[in-house]
Image 1 (cartoon, helix red, strand yellow):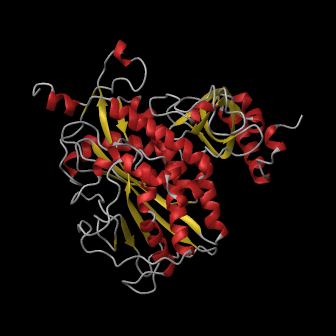
Image 2 (cartoon, helix red, strand yellow):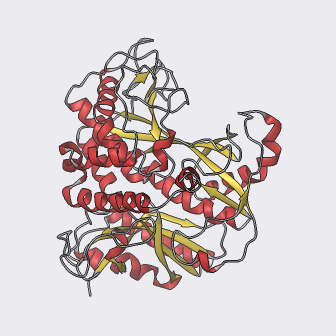
Image 3 (cartoon, one colour):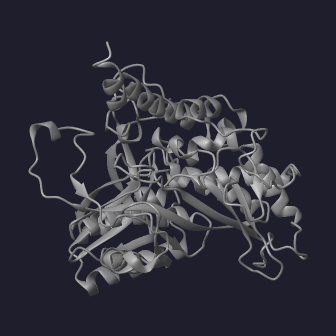
Length: 476
């Protein structure tokens, strides 16, 4: 009988050829287990493992999973009604019906830290054959398609900061039951405060080599690795990808590095600012450009100090929509504690040619095929698909609406400049009521995503923090 993928025309002819190649490789390499993974609303990979001989059936008929996985907060609580008054309006969601995960043949990798195990990323469908409006990867694909329809081809490169610690052995206790549970016990790997010096290069080399090897085995091109400013803080950059490739890389490397490093006794955290003494906030700087159908970089100016019309429109779109799309660049409560004056992180909405305090940094030089703009507002915990989609939607709007940016700023912390949202609740309020955001990301998605982030805020508000306990417990 004809399967789901054939009925709904999911795999084209090149895709079917790639599937045949994957089946041959699985047999030739002796792969025993295939993991099927998909990104949830937070960009966290979820999935199941299958016997490798099931892979052909999985490409055709997919993998079922509870639809509630798309409605959970970071503590894995389902935050929308599913047993009654189901609120998404999507067929099959009520009563936690199944969603269907169809593997993407372009997202097949053999995992380097496991024997005889491969991984395939899946896209999310509903049983009627429609791509799920709650699938964040599908949203990024839609944004990329809108650019392509306008004759623009998006490219993005990753610049990621993270913290790597040594894991300390500790038996699980009753307090660890459930989520979020007790954070792991860790110790720092260096003193910090030695930006780019070689003093700590040797001590961090085992970690940096493991990151490079793991990413290389997954076809993620690491360009540079360095010692960042804070204790146990590193930075690495990856080669530019077209379309949503940078988001695919980020989703996979976050999951892969957590697993590969844990096996060697390390814990890598993409949390913006861990509550460890002396820690510095980590950012995710997203480098982006667009090219024409011939591959010419449309951000590369003809004269020094000038910007192309496309680059100017793109920057103007990012600045114009910055308040409403901050939710997707910095989706956690902690992410907004990075936005401070004179901290190499943006606090206000501005752009510059080469200033590191501005939200948008334009690195556009005549003759430089790598001319690009850099958004410095993101955090490493962002859902990569939503972050990239927000840039594509806003940049394209700036180009098509012929927007023009204000003059480049010399002082990114000038108090007269408009501010970025200073908290997650402010960013959420701006995004959920914004017509542009709802039109581009979809009403159903924004209603569900807003409910998830509101649940996160409500949980935080109900928690008595260490600061409150210190301030009030003995004083009153």
